[in-house]
Amino acid sequence: MSEQPDTRDPYQRAEDNESSVARWIARGSLDHLLSVLLRDMRVATTIDDVSRFTKFVAIDWSGANGERLKGIAVAECDTGDDTPSVLSPPRGGWSRDAILKLLSRYAEERSPALIGFDFSPALPFVDEGAYFPGWDRSPTDMRSLWSLVDEICEADRHFGMSSFVNHEQAREHFRAPGKLGSAFEAGRGRLRRSEERQLDAKLSPSSCFNLIGAAQVGKSSLTGMRILKQLNGRIPLWPLDRVPEVGPYLVEIYTTIAAREAGRRAGRAKVRTQAELDDALRELGISSPTPCVTLDDHTTDAVITAAWLRRVATRMELWSPSEMKPEIARTEGWTFGVT
View 1: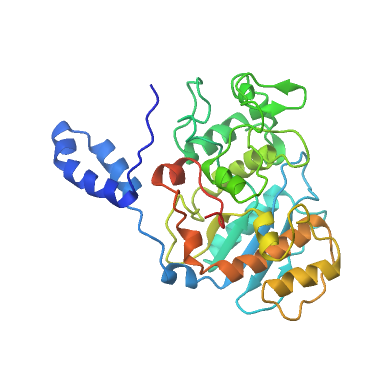
View 2: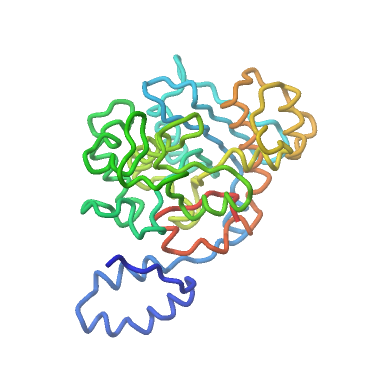
């Protein structure tokens, strides 16, 4: 029988756990005690935690095959109201390895950067109590999921994910070109809890188990998990980890949320002209936008989302969604901007 989700709020869970300390010690279950206490020592994010960020970075991601990927773009800005700068890629274009090096540099410099990445850091878990129901290797938390994906894909170059979606057990959970897994949920596919809330907000999230179509996000998520595994905690991730006192912090972004706040209508989130970009940036508090040399979807997504991150970083309701319980933070994560 799968473990039932704990419906208590984090503070009630912590109080209940305190009363159980003596019982766990008496049973000799110190390992379990430590894991539960560490899981529940989650302090609410405060304005002081997030007001220290002075750099805002948005990474538009790609799960495509290959080394140099046109779908990756990076923009960053400092506090103030300047237009975000588009970071120049290494010669030949951005690669996932180059992004890993960029993130590692932010970590080494202890940059006060809030960094948004446009992929899901985990698969749906809460709806079924498992990522892969029925598979004995199904992980029980987000970091274990990263490890499993990275292990199975070890031979895939450029942080690819082909080996995972072709794995004998894993593939049964995905909808892929030419293969509908027996465990793929009919229709849209399984969603994380934050993605269900996106539906409520009239957004159009895709299941991470779907690998078909222009809107699919599964490949991006699986390749992104490999990068998170390689980072090995050098940059903490919200809401899995608390806001660090110094250094950078990672959040999952959905560029359509930023575009909506920038005045883009449903179904017209993509920006492809300088006039459209200028209008979007003015909505985000940039009175005199500077021209962007590149105007493809990925670059403008990154520019708009970096400006949006700067604008909303101290909006405290975004850091404490009502449905983001500890189990969800540990297994699925949450999309920043979804309340």
